Length: 255
Image 1 (cartoon, helix red, strand yellow):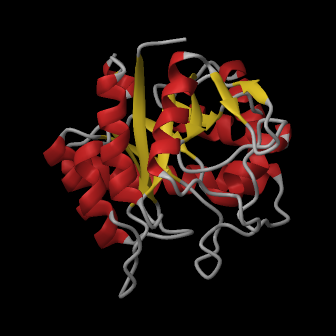
Image 2 (tube, rainbow, N blue to C red; image 1 turned 90 degrees about the horizontal axis):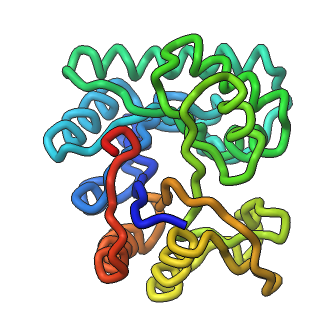
Image 3 (cartoon, one colour; image 1 turned 90 degrees about the vertical axis):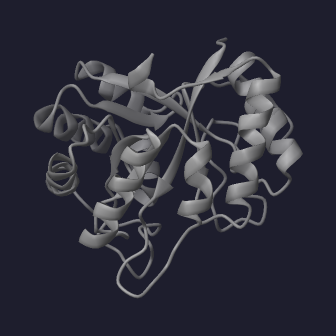
């Protein structure tokens, strides 16, 4: 399908005395970072530090708004209205944008986190609320969303640039959704398998599901999770694998 891809990672999710994720180890290998904005993780000091590191390494920065659920790390579903979602996303983008302006960093994108991401991928009214929030704050921001989902459709309809996202370290169901984290087969633990699959998603536009089917999958940007047990290894191996396959790794806003 293409010979280039963005490699993004969810970062800045530590807060207070709690350290989450291998941010420092992963940063050298990625091209975009999704920075938590204080609801599911992150705090003002962590946001500042993560933006500074992104600027130092030339990594494009984006907001990573989530549900207000520190205890559940934003991965538990909540009964929220589209109006709630709109307000939460505007609030969180605004918080990170202020720190970005102070640091002289231009935000590139927005990617919802965890349960909010999965809920909006499946529920069009929530996807529309996220797209509207992004558009109203800054229509120049790229909206990241699950490939083939309502998030991508809503972003396109709102006139935003969208990036179809796939996951190197998560497994897929037949409908293109991610295997729930409650299942033992939710994550990919073998680096070789993850790299081979990621290359196929970019080069051929397909992915094999846990049921053994192959489904189409557009891959503009690939996500790894800094809080995964093999995050740094996966990040390095993905960069090596893309290089060996002749696939350029570039941030979405720098193409």
